[in-house]
Image 1: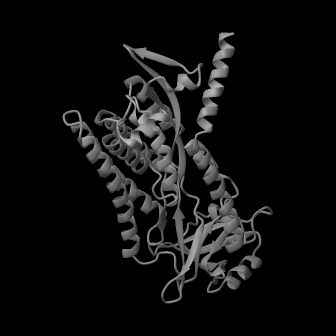
Image 2 (image 1 turned 135 degrees about the vertical axis):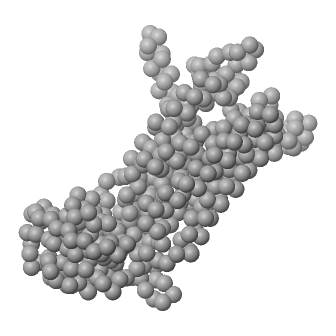
Image 3 (image 1 turned 30 degrees about the horizontal axis):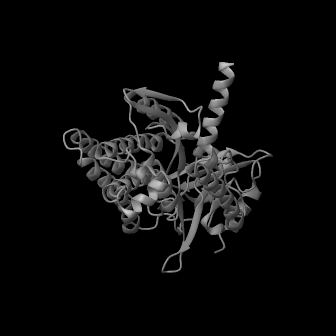
Length: 401
């Protein structure tokens, strides 16, 4: 009977998790990203480069291990967060989603929500008219569990730890699904660029002071320390941002972002250590995280503007802008940005030349390729019956803009 009760309570707790707005909106965004990618690829590229649902897989899996580690750390250390902050966090995340994927990482959402609740706690009291209205709704903003600098310190620590975990996830995560988008330069030349929109979910178990949940759900597990009661809650934390690559290789841009985020995390960690002596520095730290995150994305944008377009036309041949997985092109180690100079000993200047060269030898392909650094290499592979007739690649010259 106890096992059945535990199972039912676990299912109810999971239901509370998936019914939170950030979880629902995150799932919808991941599905929409996949749908839009499929539609765009069929419209502009006339083929679906990546047929798997990598957006949904990334959304559900990237944050699992960091979420478990941070949850255990949160519960073991005892890092209580207030109901005030959780409510405002959901609202801030939804508002920031109106700006796209740019600012939904916790360095933005945790910081903005923590500062917002701190400001509300300073100006909203149970004696004020606004406070009386909120009190009638049993709002936690005017309750005894309202935000303080000590609570802000915990939010700050969470934000710093999640930033550190983000660096590890970006370093290890697979971000090799490059779908090109196109624009014309001022000179009328067509160039490719790549919009990177990593979005993932972190399930985070937090400790919440008070008996708010037991008032709503009698079965909700609680524990007591002295006269204070605490509950556990699993909250869905959305992590993501957006950046465009057109003057760097995506791998180079990612490494530059990781470096900038690492500097920000070190600075934030040092400042967090000082909060043990001056609690008010927690609010300063959240402000630095918020502004620092914006500056990191700004630095990336400046790098892209400063350097020349990397994925434009090349007089030597045909520019590769997409490579389909498990294709002859992938077997030949072709990458975005490569230029096809020769195919089966035939010089290439048009897409028709490339098509003709492939029909001349349908069982084998030999390419002369110029890498982005200017190096010329020869690569070859046998062609099988199930292989794509175009080697599974898209060139810039294929695009009708």
